Length: 142
Image (cartoon, rainbow, N blue to C red; front, side):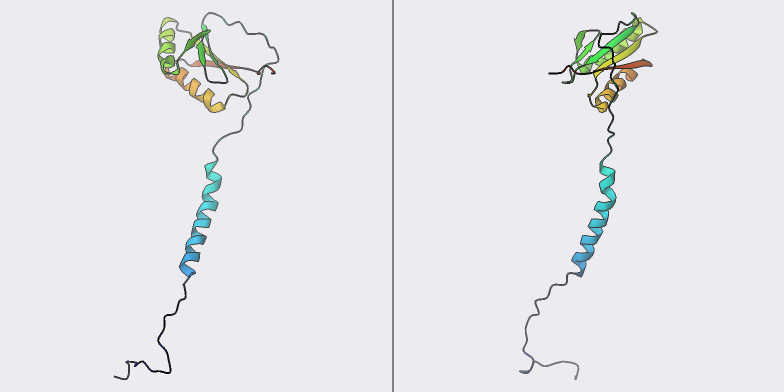
């Protein structure tokens, strides 16, 4: 019974208020390493500026070429007529059914985000049109 200790007056009983911070530091270092590894992967975009033509007059296209115009605020036009993006694929599909050698040229401002161009080209591809082109134009100076 010598293993049990009796409280004595020489050693006062008390609570030691020490906080063990080792697990907290381990967690902080693990999170730091995770953020250091994943932070470069969060930026997936490309900085890409499309070239603009030097000739400012509008190009004339043959009848088997359809122009898909897009403005900087996102409005779409097909051969000069306004079109909604929801009906774009179906409209292009109907045009492609009438003409076998149909080509689509996307006319867009130079500083339009490239992701928007990719979305429009995806509509053209879903319509079954394989021949595509891009014409960029500079924005007029204000």
